[in-house]
Image 1 (tube, rainbow, N blue to C red):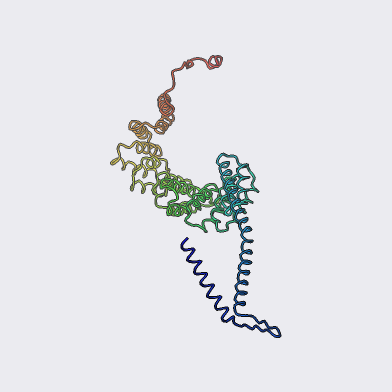
Image 2 (image 1 turned 90 degrees about the vertical axis):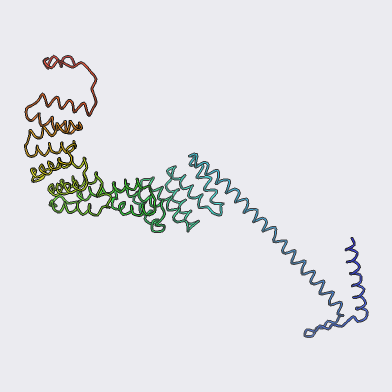
Length: 423
């Protein structure tokens, strides 16, 4: 209150002072423009200027206030659209998680039309459309996602590749994924999907070339990578021989298999199963002698029971040398059932029937196996020892299939007709 009176007093003093100035000297102002002149006092001109400024300021404020309601309306509409989009997006995602594909597609598509960032809505709606089998709708939604967010090519491409793989469109999926790999070479999920596409297409060469990227970017666990490496190597070896023309000679076929083997990663060339496959392919290519030499060198480096057993299956042009080689191994591996089985087979190749029987029996004594029983039974049968062969065969059958229950059996001396009559 005190301040108000002070201000009022100052205004009165200023007014009195201005009034005194106006009385003492009103001033004179002349404005002329062409033939028009305006004469007035200085104080009247100042008053008119103040009034004009006040009118102009008022008009500007009125215009500004007239624009505010329109902006408020637009802002309100934007907030309302965003709220509706969020609500429908939530409903659509819930329907998607519940497997209600039609409802999910409808809500997500509606939300995308109102959303400022519709990418997620379009992608999820495309998945819902795909689950309903609406291929055209899914493709259209993916195209809308691309147009709405051109920079999201990788995200859109991943969903497209997933849908293509799910449809069984493996070749288009491969093309999509190779494009994505060029855009994002370190994207681990793209690499995983690309791996899946190669396997579905039986493109083992492509998978083999992809494996270093999978390992470099740690896209898969080491154990799974080793399995894929072995899988690809096995198929590549198989294809190396099957792709050769029927008229190709043994040398050409062997070179094809050997070239593939040498191109495999080092881990694969030490895998027992792959070595066994390689040896088998060499024999199939008509190069049993080269297979025998390769396997012999491999066993010198690393003794393996499975490969030792395989050595006895190779029928080289010099079976007596094979037998001598295997006999020399007995000095260090006299407790190897696989070696005894191999010695028995090599003895049969050299027609040493007695030695073969002893080696088969020794193999069974060290570790009974169906192969040793079968070989011994076959040999005894051809030597005329039918009863003993039958006994050995029964023992081998029991080992493989387990002990059979005690059941009544027909009398061996009964006439066939009498036995048949009881059936």
